[in-house]
Structures are given as structure tokens and as C-alpha cells.
Length: 283
Image (tube, rainbow, N blue to C red; front, side):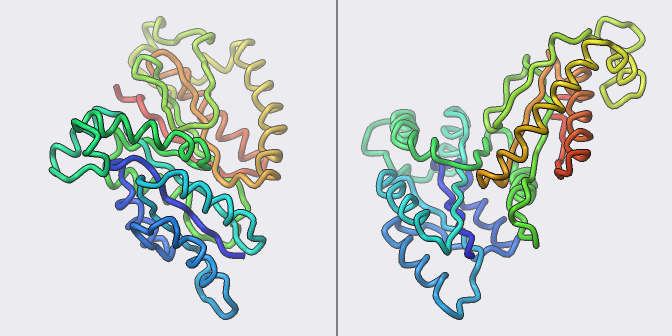
């Protein structure tokens, strides 16, 4: 079966950079493909004797409805597995990137740069809603985006395995927008109010011991394990190949870090590979 990855997203959010990364990962990449050519590429990739089994197609934002129609038609093909990657960024970041590069925005005829970006965001909302994986590039450099793509789309011998990303964060710095599940750990006792723990992080054993000895933390971990035991096989059965979880506390330094690490352990016990990162641990 051929794997097709449709790379869509806002202009300036990093589609071309994603294409370069996927090319390095071994995907056959076609950048700037008109959506009406998607069926022809699928026909060639699935033809007898074709050596191309992983195809990534970068589509523009000019014909989102047609792109959606072509994706839905592609999904009907029994010989093709289809996923959609959607790249986003906040409006301020998109404006800054366009001002730095002085590129032409595809919707510039609709008014100012701000108006053009707003129009594109509105026009792409259905395509964004159809995505399997969403990555917000607002605060990612090229190397960080590459690492995220490696996590999600490395070609291996087990394409049906459910890869999982776990990120701890602080609510005071904003909730990650490109995640599937969000857990709030602010109900747990806060090590910040313990003088000997304030300057430590959830990576330190003292903080971990402080939290994990609490009865409420034990109950939460037990309930979380039961829930993941239910959800992970169900997601996998539905064909989901990439799942992202975010675990937050106030500052992203203590409670969320401990619980993100515990979630990684739980998933390993359940037989699922996961990668954990701590977004705000040093802030």
C-alpha cells in the first residue's frame, strides 16, 4: 500500500521547509502541486512496478475546496493510505515572516497583508479541520520543525504503530495548539511553595518524590493509565498514526514535568513508543 501525505497550511507557516525535511527522510516529495493533479500522481504511484510507496504532496492554499475533494477521492482508493499534515502559525508570526521576506501573499488582492492572512485562515478552516497532524510553527525554528517531522513521519518497518509525543507546558505561557489531548495538573500540590523545591524542576528526584507520594497524584496516575489503556488501542484501530498529548501546570516547571514523564512510562508499559519534551522547564 502506498502512503500519501498531503502537506497543507498557511502561507508562511513552513510548507516548503517541511517538504525539504520529508525529502531527507526518504519521502518522494512534490512541492507546489496543483490539487487537480493529485489523482494523476496517485495513479502513477500505485501503478504496477512503481518503486514509490511514500509520497508527500505540498499543496497551495488557493483552491482549498478542490483540495478537500481530491483528498476525499484519494481516501476511497484501497491501495492508498492518506494523511494530511497542516502547518499553522499565529497571525503576528505570519505577518513578520512576510515582512522579512517581502514575498507576495496569494490573497494579496483582498487588501492589506493582515487582511490577506485573515482571509486565508478563514478559507482554510475546513482543510485544517480534516488534518491528521497539525504543527504550530510560530515558535519553531527550522531545526525544531525538522525534529517534529522526524518524530511523526520517519519511514520505518512498522507504519501502523502509533507514535506519541508528550509535551509539558505552563499555562502562563499559553496552551500548545497543535495537540490532541490536554491535561491540567494544577490541582496537584505545587512544589513552588516549598522553599527547598522552588528552584528545582520536575526532573529532580526530590520534586518527583514530593508529588508522587501524594494520594491525589497516585489516583490521577491510576486513572490516566486506565484511560490511555482504553484510548491508545482505539486510536490505533481507527488508523491514527500520530498522537500528541500536552500536560500543563502553572509554570511548566514542576508538576507537568513529573506527570509528562510518568505518562511516558505508562505508555511504555502499554507497549507504545513516545517522546517527551518539556517546553517551559527553563523559563
